[in-house]
Length: 178
Image 1 (cartoon, rainbow, N blue to C red):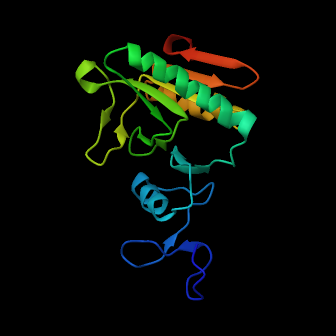
Image 2 (cartoon, rainbow, N blue to C red; image 1 turned 45 degrees about the vertical axis):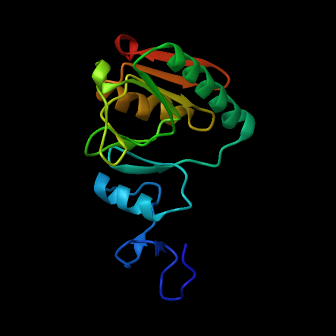
Image 3 (tube, rainbow, N blue to C red; image 1 turned 60 degrees about the vertical axis):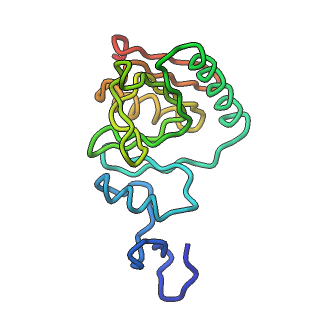
């Protein structure tokens, strides 16, 4: 955030054009293009998502409630990837599901496009389309992950969705998404 007296505190001054860019705020209603412009200007922001054109920001990550389970999830998926040709695993990637939704799941697994995968890697290195498997580690975000995100992923044809509630695990397969 700028400390310049001419730049209001709700703007960041890192825009390529030299003009101040408004910060991302929870609840902002934005297009995906505007979301990406503001996100790129917020170098201190670690995780932001655009779900149904609404900005969602994540809270700080705790060790036992998120960091450690997340590391175990990535290790598990990476082991699967090593033994399964054509499978690709990613940790916290931005996923452009469509023109209104850009999520950043804790982990995902997708088939490579040349192996029948539905998602592709765009020329700017972002995932576009629905990956086959999405996973979220949830402690403070349980309600959001089990309702809003579940409905989004179901609507975008994500085949499997895992929510690790830290206290309990919920695994949803497309035919069981109801």
